[in-house]
Length: 129
Image (tube, rainbow, N blue to C red; front, side, top):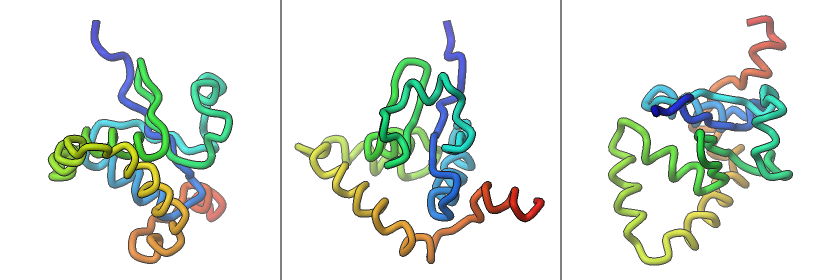
């Protein structure tokens, strides 16, 4: 039996950097974007209680959160990043590096958002777009 859904990339849809990152992924891979504001009760039930602290990737049979979600997402892109992830995964202890690296980027999204930014869906809707 085949996969029922495309993986769902759950992200902060009120963040310009997060929106850019999510749209980057969907342009290069097969994902359904789901902003925090659009979560269904069933999707929310699959996430950790502090789900708004990071991104998540929901597949039919797994939930990836924070750095693991980004690693899994990058591994599914049709881009050179999938090869970088394959090399990264071969590094001993890569899991111990992944989460602090994710947290550094997440905690400095405003800075990264100066370079990589898309108008978040919440802002688009309030402007009548």
